[in-house]
Image (cartoon, rainbow, N blue to C red):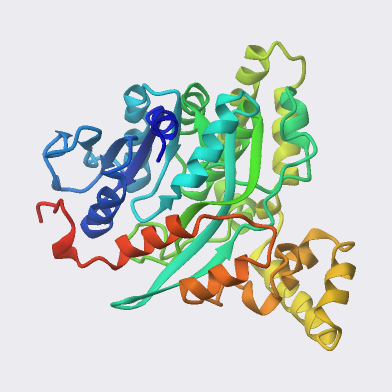
Length: 394
């Protein structure tokens, strides 16, 4: 790492929410401890895993124990931890990171260069996803290759960014200018909702309203494959957002959600000295949100329908299919895998490979990555717990 790169990384803060996951947190600390970034850990565990303040023998990783109050559910505590973190961020740039997720160093540097040039206010990249199948083996695949910049992603206009229908990126784990990150967090978490995904929807909309977005075809984010966790309240009975949205029982809460979004957009419009109806923009944004339109029944039907189409043309050469699919709607291209330029059998949510095999697939695509970075992440994941240099108090 050059001195210039170290100086750039020193302007970045990593905010890590965690709760009752000591091993994941220990691995996260192991990964970040030797990098010139500032890290704040926000722990909602019932009992503290470390003492508050700077962690032992570390000058840039701080621990904050913020357990749930008696009157708080887990999502309300999560929100309170994030609100608390706003005052902690003093660097120019900031990014949120789960305790079992990582960012590649090379990807962070690319994102920070874009933000420092003032070409954008937020930056995202594509993702590698991992899961553990044996004690000494992790398998991987590629995610979010369909993410791309919308026509108006970098527009100065709030209206243009919110109503741009070509964007599909997600900004919960975007690298952001800290002033923007603080605004987004303070708006998103000032109210709480019973369906936890609605904070994510708010985050996306409010982030887009506040941010010109850069989307890089470079592996930036590395995440663990999502698995249902019945121990987390809400996950065991999680409903599809569209089903929840349409349930008359939730109309009062949905009204609160829409008013929340409207007020947030109105605040951005005023700060941007831009004319427009915040209520109209909020309603149009929600109307265009696919996850609030597609019910569980519709998604199952669409999945079967698209699968039949793909199977029916499986005899056609991949080259011809790729050319044809480039002219089809995005939903078809995503399903067949042609959007990623990787043969469709390699790009499904259930197809994982050993890391070297996945990286060899990546070499034949337009997506860029650092082999050293991703191997380093896997080495941390494979490291025996007794070799981790900082252990939680459990």
